[in-house]
Length: 533
Ligand SMILES: [Ca+2]
Image (cartoon, rainbow, N blue to C red; front, side):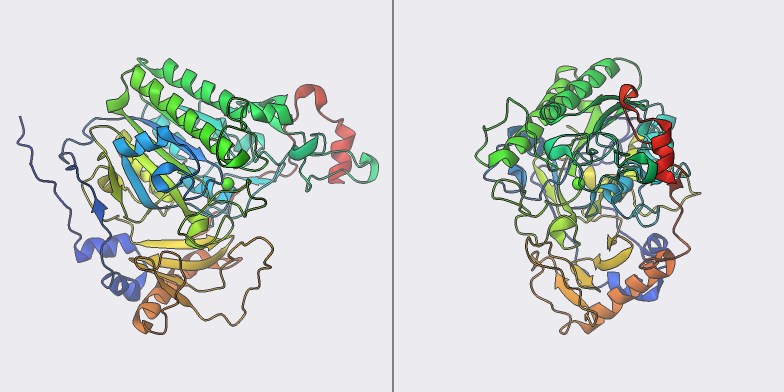
């Protein structure tokens, strides 16, 4: 028997490893890091011994993603309105990630999940609609492909939003199966009545007679639209996703190989459609009803894992794709708690997500980490869990964060966070310091956004000012200078705004996008021709 250390080993970072991590970011970037104080792992329970933590584990991996959920919408992150007993239990048995970054909108956030790259690097920096000619490129190695190569069964259930063309769907990007909405639940064509109708849906001109080119909201199985989702149908989506997830887990148990389940909820994206068992039940209106249905779903998944005896070999992570949307009415939006901003902006409220990791015996229980982590880190981390290696032909931005998740390290190995809005790099963070280099959008209802062409960079200390209220740039010129060095290095690689740099890779692209119509409703060919003519 090997002698196991009784104390956790905290890796110390040498100067040379810092250089390796930073790649070409330059001397200013590296010296910037030496200013910044560490964040803390606040755990009572001792972490597990590091050496044995992953040896041959190849855990099942379940990634549960909410849509548009705010940082403070669940109990472990401070919600007093929404009842989330299953997420409360998950946090009590696992690790709360207080500083987990996504992107500020659906498509860019989801491509970060799949590729381990900032969305700009892989050319999906904006939300794409139905029949978009662009989508996820076949050149990218998705996390599903890399896990599949390690023997994992893979399933995608729920919202995809990385392209609805045949070449862009999940089953072309590493998933054995797919069941869900290919994009947001407000993106149905005019054929959908009521709240599903997408006001931006395109209609065919000329000989097309103004008919819909966008299909009504489709439910997709693998590559085919199997149903039109009506308003009433939306009420049942979460229950159906959950049933599909539980079925998949049951099918995989005892199959002799691990599985990867990506369960991307449609909730709580507008229009709000809590199921019949949840409607009118919460103390927080329709929005709270749907949050509580997500929590129920988490419980169904976790209880299935427990019942099947898979707990000790299953890693589960819960998060959201971006911050809460603006409050449209008192019961229609989430909350970011102490964070400033909302969905669609790069203040912390737009991009910092309520996140919990769970793996009994491996991930510390009842603990919180403030280490800087993010969804770009999931690909290399999951591949590490699976015993694989990330291919080096495509540069990625994320790093393996398993040392933090397994309680072996306090510090993330990634030292810099970049905040993009579309193709614009709006801010950068290292240590406690966040520097905004353009005007950030608060995304407040009814307040028009006015970018300041003469904006002077704002510096925030997130450890003392998590609400980004106090610009301390004038007091810290050296920090500003060093963070500007990080901005310059990234802009050299990915370009300044829409002038793309050499590090940006092309998206997938098709000439004539087709809609995901159920077979019986597909419009005649002449309508499609009329649209493109
Ligand atoms: Ca979203």
